[in-house]
Image (tube, rainbow, N blue to C red; front, side, top):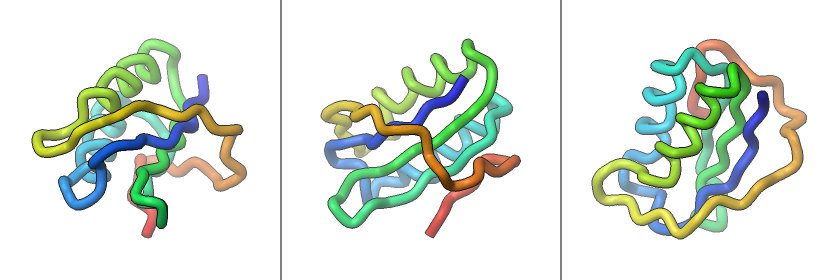
Length: 89
């Protein structure tokens, strides 16, 4: 299963990328996370359905200090999904 979303809200400057990377690695997912210039965080992941569902739930919660307003579904990324899950700069 694939996941490609933009996370909106107060999600930059609060450790969100690190939070996503650790959650995704713990779930055994491939993919990446990066900050976008508009203040959102973009996430692309691939793996078993249950792991993707678990990551989606964690994205909605976010780390302490974050305030997630919602997820915007995006078309599947053309950037290769890496293993282990990584932070793009």
